[in-house]
Image (cartoon, rainbow, N blue to C red; front, side, top):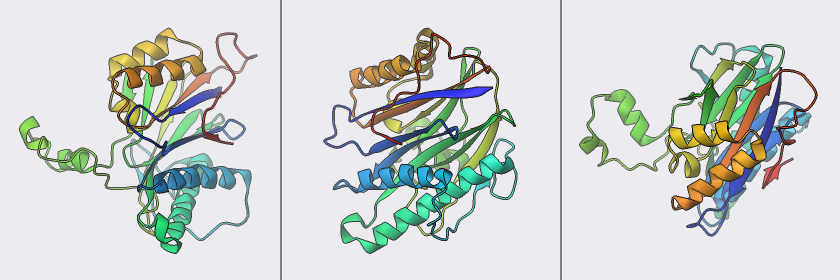
Length: 280
């Protein structure tokens, strides 16, 4: 099996700057979405650094800082860093390295103090036939399989944390909690505890990485319909972003689609991986 991917990022209709970033590294089967925060363009710096650090890691840049942190496994993930197999371990190490770089920059620069970024990163292993996912924050990964959409990451947010601790909370209770408070992100601390999981893959699976500018405005039905009706990944990305803008576009909007296929010549229905504001 192989993975093909496309991505798109848009500033939306309410923001002056795009603080989202995405990464397509098809030669390493690595993909990422980051949603920066910090104001005064610092979020843009943080998300760009996250994408660049992961790209450098997989391309073999030897100048790497010492990282600290741990990765929590979920959905059956295992192994030294919370993700099973060498692919998952490398992805986790790349994210920890990105955290170290962003935290160091924030400490060295008054202009960038307090900056950070959410991240959701995926790495496909053809040998294992598994997709490894590492994430921190509220950028998400979904799996669309046989017409059914399933979220495979859990938001690191005040709202989600409250629901985990108190699943009996009512909608009225939740209304008092801020919805945009993130409890984990890259660059906020010298140590980071992202979550990791690994999903077995089948031909036809589509994995969706996205920032909250997309999943906050589109429901599962919207996403499922567009991805199923539009087999060209670049076009599906464009339709998803356009619909989020139609719904208000109140934040930056970023999506990466990853489709798992049988090894064969490039199918006519799929475009080569495309990108906008991507780190290459």
